[in-house]
Amino acid sequence: MIGGGVVGLSATVALLRRGIDVRCYEPGIPMGERSVGDTRIFRLAHAYPDMVELAARARTLFSEWSELAGAALVDETGTVVSGAGAREWAAAMAAAGAAHELVEPGSSLLRLPATTFAGPALVDPAGGVIRVDRIRSFLVAGAGNRLRQARVDALEETIAGVRVVSGPDADTFDTALICAGAGTSALAAGVGIDTPSALEHHLRVSFPIRPGAPEPLQCWITGESAGVLGTYQHRAAEGSWAVGGEIGAALVGWEGGRQAAERASLEVLTAYVAEHLPFVEPRPVATVYCAHHPDLGDGLRFVRRGRILAMYGENLMKFAPLLGETLAVACADGSTPGNAGPS
Ligand SMILES: Cc1cc2nc3c(=O)[nH]c(=O)nc-3n(C[C@H](O)[C@H](O)[C@H](O)COP(=O)(O)OP(=O)(O)OC[C@H]3O[C@@H](n4cnc5c(N)ncnc54)[C@H](O)[C@@H]3O)c2cc1C
Image (tube, rainbow, N blue to C red; front, side, top):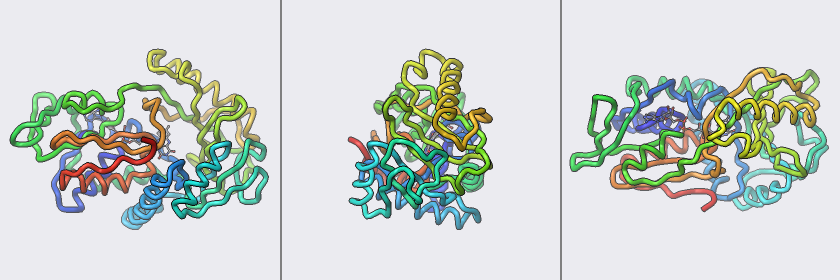
């Protein structure tokens, strides 16, 4: 396993549960890159019926994880998707047989930090806040001493298996899975697997929730409309509201540097909160940064070359337990899981 983010750790734990030995290489803090932070949004709502179905399977598996962890890993607040795309997403949910409601702003089914916004609004009652803090503890404990603090420099397929080179050491395994997040494309390219390499800076910012806000607030994804930012929002640490958005490639382009992108994101998101969220104070209290792929939305991608499998995508946290199971099967039997989402 190359990468100890949520994908690599989920697959490691799923393999160990099948009695298959595994080593997970992670040079930094486990789940400290794209899986960093304490919360994410869970939703069944997607633009594609196959993604809705996969999210429903992931939700069932999150419940199994919660049992094993002895704590709820998804807080069931519900998720709302609003704006022009909401009808299309509602159609995908209907096609997948998932419970949902399509309502207008002002509906009694909504508990959001704003009452006026571009509708319609799709209510996904199975959505909620993913407790990444608890998942991290659960997976790190599950991986135990199979987690090795080391960077992988190169992979090489030989007759004996896959040679994994890490500094002065090299070990050979039956199979290897590259799930190294922003590090995937460089490693995969070395073994002839093509994956997206472009990166963009991304910052999510948390602000205090004002007294009197509806309880419990639903997670919220707003479409871009009439010059208003497309965002994702949810309750983060107690009393704070996390907001992230697509603020424009010119402001967060890789070449512009992390500092400039963080400054611009803080400014744009704070202005958005001041103008559009009456129940949130426009005073940043925390941030979560990552380097992400700019051109990938929802979708799961798997590429195999011989004994080496690479997995990539965006918004993968909500699929973590399903990815763990799927990748464990693929590692064990040499299969390649089918892609999901936009082709
Ligand atoms: C601010 C923010 C908000 C998000 N919101 C949501 C959301 O609401 N819902 C949702 O489902 N998802 C969300 N996501 C996305 C989700 O968190 C990520 O898709 C997911 O965590 C990615 O996990 P990963 O294991 O693929 O990558 P990572 O967590 O980045 O793990 C990859 C690991 O590989 C390691 N690595 C890199 N190179 C090497 C190497 N050469 N050798 C060994 N190891 C290496 C890295 O150190 C890293 O720890 C969000 C992400 C961010 C940052």
